[in-house]
Image 1 (cartoon, rainbow, N blue to C red):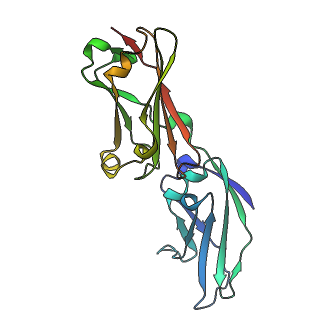
Image 2 (tube, rainbow, N blue to C red):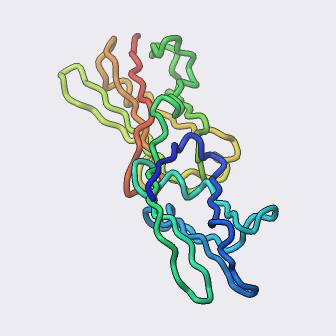
Image 3 (cartoon, rainbow, N blue to C red):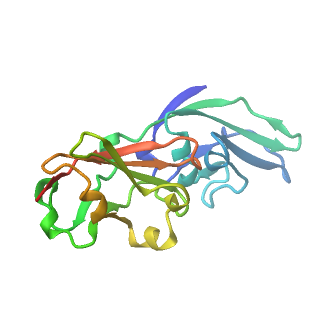
Length: 219
């Protein structure tokens, strides 16, 4: 069979049942396979739900790596050790507008207009928690601006080894990143610059773009 599910409905995981009346003999074991992209998107569930021995819960953490991709779902009964037919399931992506938008935490910057006079050591950005957020997930933040001479000036707020969500960030439900004053002073005044956020749910293979912001810097 073929079907589709929407990632936004799967933040609590999902349930898959084997057909009733399979006549599984005593001592036989059923494994439910969810085969998606890589280790972060696949799982084999061997224990059914307490209330229904024909029903298996697929945990939410194996959902997001498969957004926009197909998953093969099948079960295996041992003995005899045979696989069922494969059910092809498309996981529709989370809508882009449902991801959190970066906020300027400090200094206070109404309508994303940053006054350089109010900046002491830098500008702090805040990203609030999102669906499927997990410790170790990779979040990349980059800044692109323009100097008075028209040169592009880039700053990496969070890249490489710094991308992984820490335990503290996870439990706080937010990520904070500071853009140094020295970088801002290189940029052209009264111009906008962009701050982009990308999150990977599959160990860095693909990054999903979160809503970006374009603050304006004034004196």
